[in-house]
Length: 425
Image (cartoon, rainbow, N blue to C red; front, side):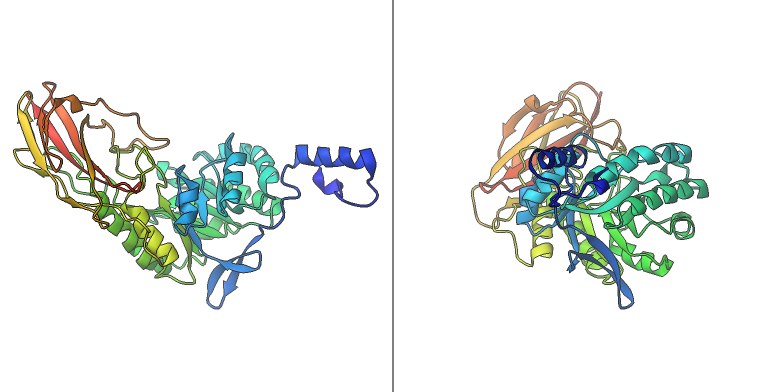
C-alpha cells in the first residue's frame, strides 16, 4: 500500500496530508526510517558487505543481553531467531545503540509448512524492511538437523528466500545451519540460488570451520552465527557420565581461538560473526553458554570479544578462576561432607566476592530453545565457606549435583567454575 503514497509530495496539503501521513505510519511504520541499505558485493576474489556505501564487518552477539554493553564493547550487530511481539522494540533498541540486526525468520523442518508460511512471512518482511537498523534476513535455524536434510526442504527454503529478495532487495538473505557435515552445503549450492550467505553454528569445530568451509567450494560467503565453548556433545564426561564444564577463563580462550582462526583468519569469505550467547541462559548447566550472569555481570568471554572487536582491552577485566579442585571425592555418600577449593585473582587487584552454590544437575543437557528452568538449590548444605574453599554436607537424595563458584569484582565483572558431584546411598 505504501508504494501508492508519495509522502511529502506538494499535492498533499493540510488535513489531506495529515491523513495520508497517518495512514502511512499505521500500515508501514518505518516508511521514512532513512538509511540502512546493505549489499553483498564481490571484492576481488571474495565478498564484502557494504552498508550505506561503506564496508561492514559483523561484530555481533546473539541473545537478549545488554545491548548498550554490546555497543560499548565494540560490537555493531545482534541476531534474532524469529519475528514476533518484541521485534519492533528490538529494532528500536538497536537503533538507539547504533547497532544493526540480523532479523530471523523461524522455520520448522516441514517443506509444506515452510511454503504455507510464505505469505505470513511476506507481511513481516514488508513491515520491517525499511527499518534503519535492519542488516540482513536470516531464514531458519538448523532446520536440517532434525532428520529432514532433503532436496525438498531446501527447495522450500529457496521459495521463501526468493520471496524475501523480491520483497526487500535492499538486504541480503542468509540461512543458518548446524556445522557443515553431510549433504547440507551441496544442497544449498544446488537448490538455493537466492540464499546469499551461509550462516554456520559451530562450537568445538569452530577453529577449523573456516578452512573446512573454504575447501567445500560453496561459492557463497559465510557468517559464524553461533560460537562459543565446546558443546556438551563435544566435551569429555567424567566417570559417572557428567559433562566437564570449562571455567569462564577457559571459555574466553574458545571465543578468541574461533574468532582469530575462522573469522579474522578467513578474509573475503567470512563476513563476521555472532557470539553465543550474549546474555544469561541455562542450557546444560546454569552457566555453560552465557556470556553474562543473571545480574548482567560480564564474564571473560566478553573481555576477549571486546579486545578482538575494538583492538583495546576492557576498561575493567574479569577475575581469573581455576577449575574447582575436589579435596575429598566427587562421588560420596549422602549426608557426608565434601570439601573443595579454587584459585582466583583479579587483574585490577580489586577485592573479590566469592559465592558457592550447590544445585541439582539438569536432567537433559540437550534442552535448548529459551533455556531450562533452575534446578533444586541445595546450597543450605554449605557448612563452611572459606571464600576460596568450601565444605558441604551432601543431601541424602542420591543423584548428580553440581557445585558452582561465582566470583565478582566491584566492576560488574565476574568469573565462574563448576564441578559435577555424584551423591550415592
